[in-house]
Length: 190
Ligand code: HEC
Ligand code: HEC
Image: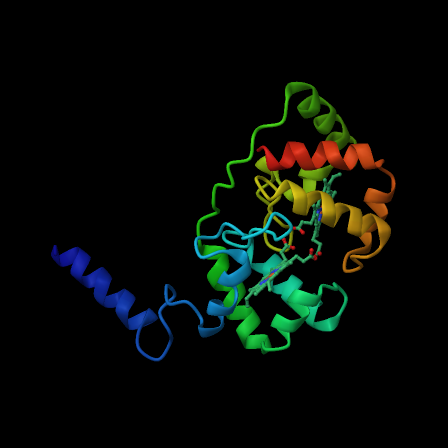
């Protein structure tokens, strides 16, 4: 190791070192998640969302909302019942650092892309979900998320079954089911 690198390594060891767990060590409770969200980040079922590489703030808020009941899902309710606030924070930090998996979803056909981009522009989806739909902070990444899940969760916002974000509910109420299918197919294929 060169002297400069040695100093850097020593400094890093001093700042990141001892009592804290190493950032690349999975939190203990992460073992609970793989059964559904996948050993390598590919969920075992198309109705289950990707969480590897999802944004940290967003993951934490969802775990919190499942535990408060603002977002309802039986499977996730059983999981969050076993988590403290610290566990949720550690899990959000950990999963956000993992690489987004490739779900091998096909790009949407050109006519679907054109229609989706028109709807997205009128609704200003990229203003919050960012260019490339990778999201940021509390705004979720949508690009290459499972199409089945995207459609289901947009329908759930619209019907009010997913009631943890009034803005998304109000916005999606103004679009038809065909629009949601178009958006889901487009986003999944990005
Ligand atoms: C028994 C299966 C199961 C297990 C185990 C499980 N999940 Fe989930 N998870 C789901 C399902 C199903 C959904 C989608 C719920 C919905 O449609 O609203 C979900 C949704 C989520 C979401 C919301 C993602 C989004 O895009 O909105 C997060 C975050 C999440 N899970 C994190 C975790 C973490 C962290 C663990 C481990 C501590 C875990 N899950 C364990 C089934 C599971
Ligand atoms: C004003 C900002 C804003 C705009 C505009 C917006 N969103 Fe969102 N969206 C959010 C936020 C914030 C969340 C996270 C809500 C939560 O915490 O549950 C979200 C959540 C979502 C989710 C759930 C993702 C998941 O993993 O469960 C989908 C899908 C989505 N938005 C699609 C869209 C689409 C499609 C458009 C355009 C038609 C759009 N959004 C416009 C802010 C926005």
